[in-house]
Length: 309
Image (cartoon, rainbow, N blue to C red; front, top):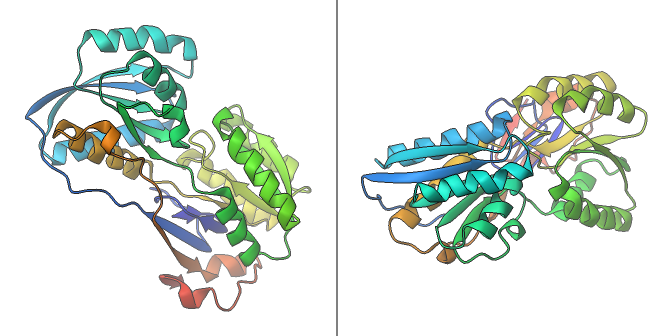
């Protein structure tokens, strides 16, 4: 579900912004089989940020519910790519049955250094991070930029300047595609890159006079519970609607856990395609829309799964 003034697709979020529009992406997964009682799993974590820890918790919880007695070796990278090599060497020495990576940095390093051990990647924007590795599968965060911008245009046809918050360099390709689509639609993107969540207040202030709407694209460093309050307050204070994915990081980890169980049950990783959006549903929050003085098209509530008055 998406948070903020207006929201776009993804999987949900523990602590939510009041949303005018929330989309939920339904991911289709095969049935799960129970794995053998004890398994060693190496986990490579790109960042120390909250979303990665939430995803790991969801992963562990899923395996526990399926009665998988897993032993976890956690290898944190702390955002430093040069740590990946040594940590992966340690991981290989423990002879894990499975490697679980969180984030693009960890995933890209693992597919290069671990070509044989089954690998499940989470918290990545798209499956390109895996470089078509035959031993890997993933749950991706990316949702087509064009679809989000089309929804934005449908909801706010008068708003032409789109402020964009992002951090990960892996979003570069997504932003290039978004810029192309925006030009075709007569929209302008105002980009603001955050090096850390501490940069958020200044980035928001710089957009106050430059943007008609704020778009937070999927990015674990930019969109997580600690950013909820400043983004919401900015939106209410300036009456600039926020459009962004409310990602349930725990759910993303759980989906990775489902894939892990399939692999541990004998399914080759290459037989499990990356989890991708299949369908979108949405809810409408008319109360927030009125607070921001956003006029919602009359036909939108009629097609919503639920409407908040």
